[in-house]
Image (cartoon, rainbow, N blue to C red; front, side, top):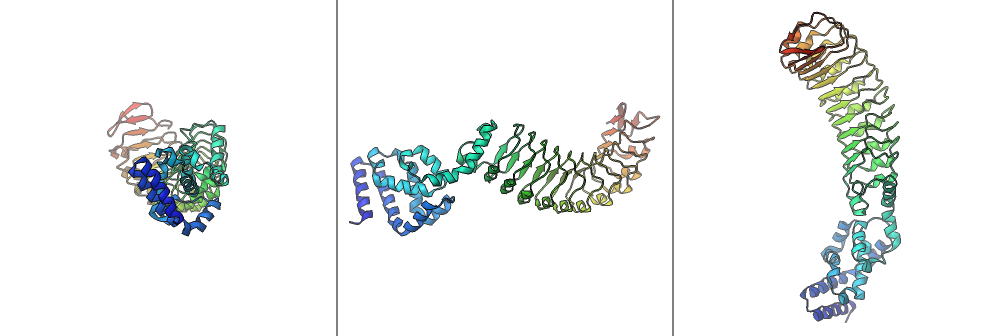
Length: 419
């Protein structure tokens, strides 16, 4: 009788003694699996020596369905009676099987069946656990709850949302880059001065918000985040943006307001899916012409910069709904503003305007107009033609003889007309 047949016979006897038909099926499954193991011995040995992570699904496909059945049965092995569960050949098989699986399988096995897998080569487990262990230690030091950042390896490997808003953290560990399934990373209101290059490993990331930190630069590896849809890096201390930001071609929203930017890279023009661009509160004196390529934009905010004139290409954004250029150094406003017939909000307060172009009267969808804190001496009569207008702010101008009503608007208090 050869070894597999003897093995099958032994298990069948044990099963018969217990009078449980399911144990016969179990014995048959192990028998069929063991028949394949001799032919795969070299590959299994190589796996046991390897410290690289093994893909569970690929492994099961490689050894074909019998091993998959055995793996599922292994997860229920604690239901076996002790004489069968402690059978040496079953333990040997369990050990060989568990050692070939990924850590996400080994860890729950070792917790549930420590008597079966306690001899898994420690080196293999340690190599797989090490990066996550460093991340867990960092979370412990920063008092981040296990609800926010799980301590189980399986949960970390599959984590998709990480909310670290206002956690008082001053750095991110390189090991953050092992959370490769992350789709949302929220780091708002912390004390971060930099981001690790490993953040570029988070290639599934769609939403990255780092608002209100102390970042002075972005890592070049950010160009790997090509699935990113929303990026908020406002309220930091950035003086430049890397050219590599142009690789984020899926971006819909880019918020970089309230930094210390003096210029923008031309590569920003590659972000052709962009719908919202917020660059307020910087030190820009000009805007790159490449922004004119972003024809999907519906909101642009350049408030609180140092612009003294607006580029003509803004007049090509005929689908634009909101334009903010308040608190710059504008002394005149271009006639081409009348081309933006879809505008609903126009914010031009805090400049040095002495008059408004009549072409604004063409903006028949306008609902909000802020012309406060300029040097206007009259409100033009054509404002009454803006029949959709609901709010008009005009305080802080040297205006006299203001009417009680303008079209559908009534003066509610000094400097504000409302419908």
